[in-house]
Image (cartoon, rainbow, N blue to C red; front, side):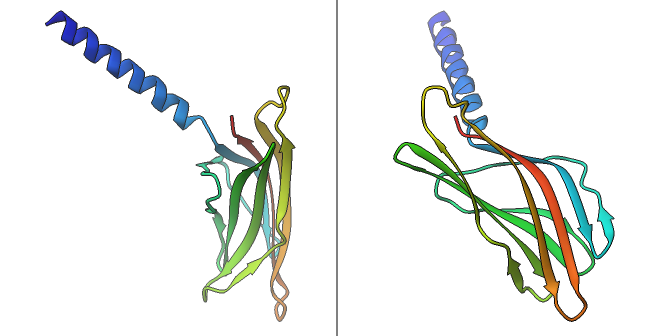
Length: 147
């Protein structure tokens, strides 16, 4: 009976440690938001934390105003000895139309001294209505842990 309890405890501990390791890998954190839409400041206080999967596009909702919602798309991939993090933001209008920004790429070469994270700041301004000159400006810091 004690052998069964010891075995079950050992299996539970192994499961707990492997699940903790999986949760902390490939985490993207976005914080320190500065958002302005048509002269109005929008506050996003909480950081946004998502988990990315290799070669899978992840759509992240950032904020919504009266006329437009703002999203970011992230993906990462390993190519040889390099890690690439690709981001693209877009404004989604109330009719469903999307206005995209340019793709931005961050690259790191995999060496022994690489810390296993990519840090940066994203700043984008998207003009979503030429008629009314409606625009949205979003700036945020991001941190991607891939090891």
